[in-house]
Amino acid sequence: DSGVTQTPKHLITATGQRVTLRCSPRSGDLSVYWYQQSLDQGLQFLIQYYNGEERAKGNILERFSAQQFPDLHSELNLSSLELGDSALYFCASSVAGGPGTGELFFGEGSRLTVL
Amino acid sequence: ILNVEQSPQSLHVQEGDSTNFTCSFPSSNFYALHWYRWETAKSPEALFVMTLNGDEKKKGRISATLNTKEGYSYLYIKGSQPEDSATYLCAIYRFPNTGNQFYFGTGTSLTVIP
Image 1 (tube, each protein chain N blue to C red):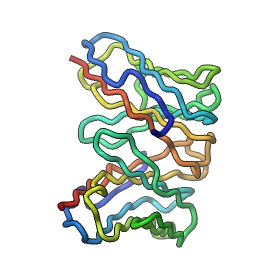
Image 2: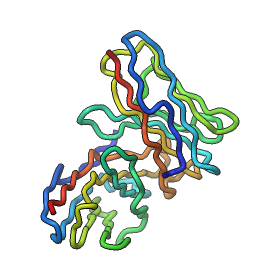
Image 3: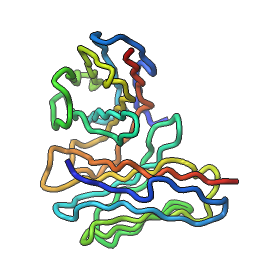
């Protein structure tokens, strides 16, 4: 158990809909990262928050948004869903905001299926 | 986008064999390399974090080396066991700060045959 909690574990929805994925980081970790893993793709970085503020942005679509709340949990909002958004979405946390020497702790992922 | 390459893409070995695989990355602005182990239906778990050229890390039967000048890292597994079956991911963190992004490779899938 990494200590990172993601909900829901599985989600099936239709095209055009909106969903929210939730992540609770390990106790004490200030950074939350979101990654997307599509079929046959590696882990694609979406966005990072550190202590409530956006720290870095990767290949995140404009239809997607995220935020980190004062209690440090984070939500990833996916809207106007398309079939291609079907993927496994991982949240990871770390103590620091950088520079990358602290390991990431991953949640178990949220599997999104868009029909 | 940083090109982090892992080879081979997949590997099947017999129980007891030793094996190794490679993570290659651009050597410029290197700051840190991470190795993660990802078992099916679980989440990735960190094996090693390496920062210095020539670094060697070991955890049980698994070890890793790092060459930052030529841009590669090797992961070695000695005496593979079926429980070593997993995908092994490497990730690179670059300096100066490129937005705190870890660039992941696509992984090497290891299957250890009993």
